[in-house]
Length: 628
Image 1 (cartoon, one colour):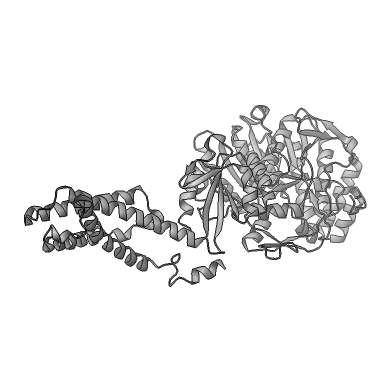
Image 2: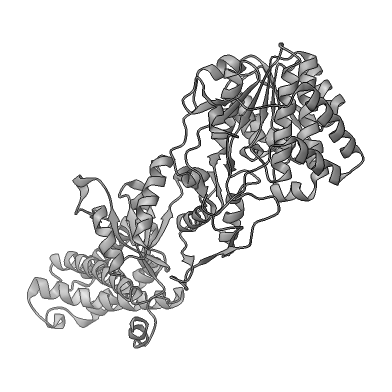
């Protein structure tokens, strides 16, 4: 019905071409010139026919000169949807020209025009030109609202960011700002840039009535935690929710105004981000030579970034991938120009003992953060030999090299998938933990610790980048099972936990972070769709934007993850969000035998033998049920 009403018009005023708009503006101003002159005489003399008082030739001279000035000023170039103070000032300047033209004609022609008429002429045109343009703008907006394809939006936040957004949206053909929403009671009911400021409680009724189809959050100053709470609260309204990029993102080029902001990992946690700040970090790493293996990976690169704030003397970035090492080095160089931290790039594999020994010896390494690992579950499941070589043998070689060199600390980055694993990746990390424990039993010079945490949002193996790509393509989002749950944390949290673990370690420590409650992957997918400003396509909403498809569990994938083998093993640590785990380990004889068997199986590329060793030395998982 709404679109039909627009079709009744002889033309579509919303989608007029630039040329058509210019012709219409010239025609409008061309009509206003003689009309304003006639009005000026009427206001001054109270007559309807100026020719009874002034020679018609003089009137024609005024009108013709005014038309010439109109074309010269190019008022038709003023965009209606950007009608602002500058445009008004240009109309004012043209009005003064009309006053001058009328005065000059009267002066040279001795026409006897009253002195106030030129002023009334310019003032009348100025007034009529502004009023006609405002009327036309409101007409365009009213007709735009008749179009079902145009979303009416509420802007949450009437601050500077919200005002700038409202001004920008007034030029948009896809959305129209309807009102501001703000928690500040002092501005409730005020009119800002032509929009009323409403209290948040009215949003629900506006959405139910179909007046608002979208809510845009324009408060860049919100912390990530507060923003996540606000998004969660607004998501119950049943309309699209979008978060506008901050000015920093816009200036840096990470976003443009037209971009749909991708969901950030910290918005997906069902808990507040853990504040892991501690003064002990600088005391542990300041002035030391620190080596990070896997420095080009998602965790390794974040460790390197956070280490720089701890002011180490030297940062040794050990990485097998040339491009990954180049990228992280290039990113960090800018941060080290203002201090004396030495940056060292080491190309090499953790399975190459000679390369590891050389890096430790040549750079006097005192602390090693071992982040190098294969972490993608299906990939390692299909390549168990390489997974075992990198994750188990590589860990042992670096840990044993640290023992021989008698460095101060060694920290292994582990995973919750190491707890009673059902896949090769988790099993390799569990055996890596066992070997680190075994190496610790052979020395009291080096303090060994392991850090176990859940899935890292935003890392290369995380579902977040995958889901973002799938949403950008229009879906579908694919999940393996509707009941799959995981513990989650952000990359900065994970990296900081590793650093804290190293600072608290007294030797042979297994640290675990309190990650709150596990999150269902399907709930994560739904939240990402909503945060991206899209709708879920399902039975209840068949016209939604993004579908969620269940593809079935992958080989070795668990429905539920754990962080401890048993709850009894949980022990408090100096940090309230971190605790120790005291779990059963292999004896020295068992560890030695396991490592020899595994190394032989890897050297002969015997995948069956690798799986047999894993099954023999790794704790068996419990039988899972859907009622877990």
